[in-house]
Length: 183
Image (cartoon, rainbow, N blue to C red; front, side, top):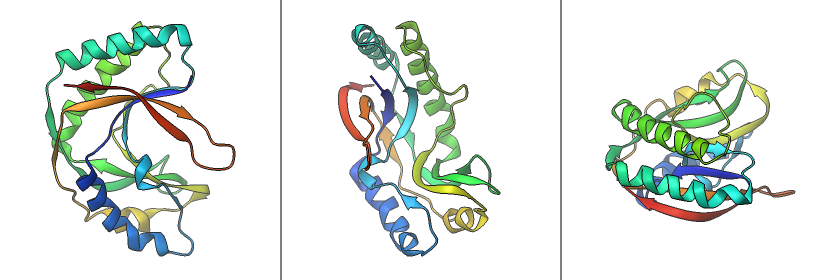
């Protein structure tokens, strides 16, 4: 099964960002925008987890939650993957003071699922919330500039989720929360 561990910002944070994004959705040559209901910060992504490993993944993530403390976080500005001259993904960033605690939580989650037998995709954790995607690479400096002034409200990260992601054939993926963990 396809799983990811994520932090989902509270509704008021998502609504604030959505309000900022809304006029940008109207641009004719813009990217394909991700619906607000799919917005999250991925801590660990596993393309394929064997059913037999799921219980241990859940248990080890529970241990991470027990050892982790809540911390404050805010979304800010934007960036692109892989680079501004050939962008495929537009994302909202995380305020500088949130990088360390979010990175620590991500590292703990990645280690935990690895010890449970699941393979984590991606070698480096880059804190971001995916906003949109382009079908073909584009020069995206104007999009980065358009989001440079964005500063979202801070919130306390006090939980994370394990989510089952099922890819849609013609539409967006379907997400089901498998477990929620309180810090």
